[in-house]
Amino acid sequence: MPLEADVLAAFPAEVQIPARLVADSVAASSEVSRRVLVVLDDDPTGTQSVANLPVLTRWDVADFAWAFAYEVDGQRQRAVYVLTNTRSLDPAEAASRNEEIVRNALAAASADPALRLSFVSRSDSTLRGHYPLEPDVIAATVTAVSGEATDGVVIVPAFPDAGRVTIGGVHFTRGTGADAGQLTPVAETEFARDASFGFANSEMAKYVEEKSKGRFPADSVIVLDLNVIRASADPLISAKAIADAVDAATGSTPIVADIVTENDLRALALGLEEAERRGKKLLYRVGPPFVRARIGQEIRAELSGEEAYAGNTPSAAGGLIVVGSHVGVTTRQLKALTEQHSAARIVEIDVEKLLGHDAGEYLDDTVGTVVTALRGGDVIVHTSRLLIKTADAAESLRIARTVSAAVVAVVNRTLKTFPPRFVIAKGGITSSDVAAHGLEIRHAIVRGPMLPGIVSLWEPVDGPAKGIPYIVFAGNVGDDQSLAQVTRKLSNTFSPAAP
Image 1 (cartoon, helix red, strand yellow):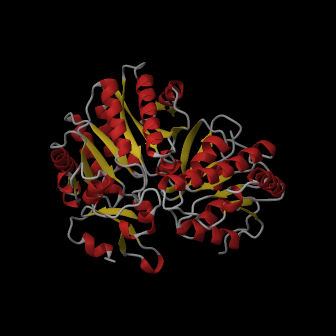
Image 2 (tube, rainbow, N blue to C red; image 1 turned 90 degrees about the vertical axis):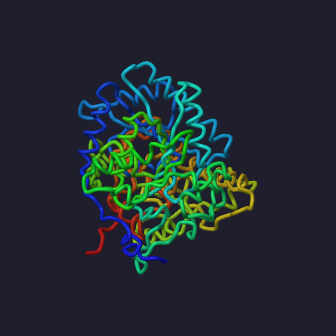
Image 3 (cartoon, one colour; image 1 turned 45 degrees about the vertical axis):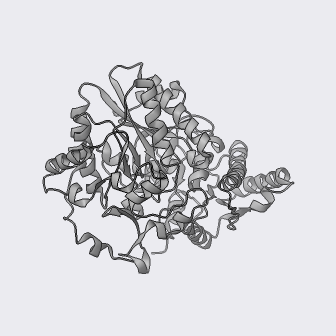
């Protein structure tokens, strides 16, 4: 495994860029018409890098109208998140949902001539998801509705806060602990062996060729490496270099970008703003922090437990921690939490029983156990750690849906029987289904991260979960202690951390 310092030695040094410079550039471009990024988030964890933005789990025209009108301190926001949950759907369903959302967003925007939309397809920083299907569908739908063709699809999976960086056109994961400072090409990680979205290439241009089945050959991909992103100590000169490099894009040309730091993301944002000012029509396929940088939002400091409950009175009930993800880091986080939180009741949902004939009776018993336990403290509900896999991607998704439906039923029935103090959902599909169906959230506001740059707090603004902090926790982020740290902030029964 290469050392990050050695790989970076071939490129220019990082350039410091304030978020305000990007925000001012975006504002200047919006003097005639206000641009809003509509972020189609294939699971809800994409919100972990932003703050004070509206989130929708439904996408009727009226829902978009609410989001476009939402204000913070008298200002309407520059981005709206739509929870599509398409990573849990088969390709046909994912395509249909993307099209419906884009059509409804454009319909809502048509009522306001001063509003123009750009679209972001937010997906996984470890390259799992429906690519290139989702940006293809978005581009085709925009063309069908407005006649506008997409010149380029900008692909930025990097998520530095979570240890995912792109250098020299290669996507890496950073090591932790004894492996700190080392880089592992993402195709050599467990994420590349995903049953539904596996891949073989870490070099982004080759990944594009692989996933597009040769429609976009690797040599047709525009690569914005760090020599371009950091072209000058003057960010405005670098912006022009980025825009110049993007200028050749036409017909949805893939454009991949090196990103190592937040400053790189801001440099890219300035360059893309310049490219769009010149007339380039771009879509974005990105990891979580891109939107924050693209709209010029400052990095929000992590929220305290007091801030998480601000404006609401926390209940005396225990909190509900729901763990569905099976990636290695989640299993380690769950182990650390259960070891440290001795007061919590642990309820395991047996996946084999869910797939059996007595699933209904088994769910009834599980709900009863959870409700009883919440009266005395926090409850950790997790699916059995034995991951049932099949060679059939569609069957793998079906099993995942069955498990997720059971988790949703437990959360929803618990909520309506004895509402918990807080809810944490661990895992992408899990947190999506818990939000939209378990807690019946339709509209929410992302308040900010619970840990630096990762793990978002949603405040439901309607439905039965209004007033209950909801924590969206991706399966593949954080270190072994992160789940325990977030739980300790919110819990009234978790013992304080050791000094």
